[in-house]
Length: 185
Image 1 (cartoon, rainbow, N blue to C red):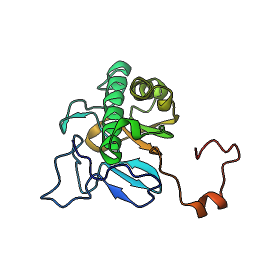
Image 2 (image 1 turned 120 degrees about the vertical axis):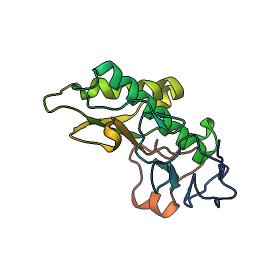
Image 3 (image 1 turned 45 degrees about the vertical axis):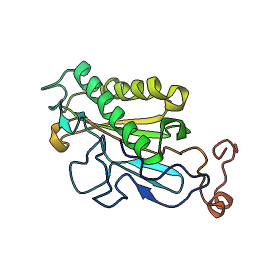
């Protein structure tokens, strides 16, 4: 497991899971499938790359929902992808306790044209986040059906994981303060 930069209070600089040199870099639990990093922390928010249902880098589910996969299999695949995204974030910020919450999740689902149960598939991802994070895993979510995806799988992109003790720069807070003043605690 990779812990490239330990959580630092009020850190606002950018870093990623792949910030170390190749010789220092331990293998990540979520190996990229191309030229990108699994997660980046910038401005106090962790962002993940799109995640697919893989174990140890090996694709375990593929196909189009409604043709090759039923809703139950697609839901399980979405849960696995969400777990991979959470793993990437944990590697980027140091540990699970460093996460304040997940803010937003978008689930892209490769499905047949007349498929309408996108939300039921995305529930698999939401369930994993709630199981792992409790209320911190309650997210704003979108479920979007598409014609094709890499490796022909449902995949997930998660945005906005503010680590504890990391806040946006003060200037940004003054320009766009949270009206409820709950977002930046």
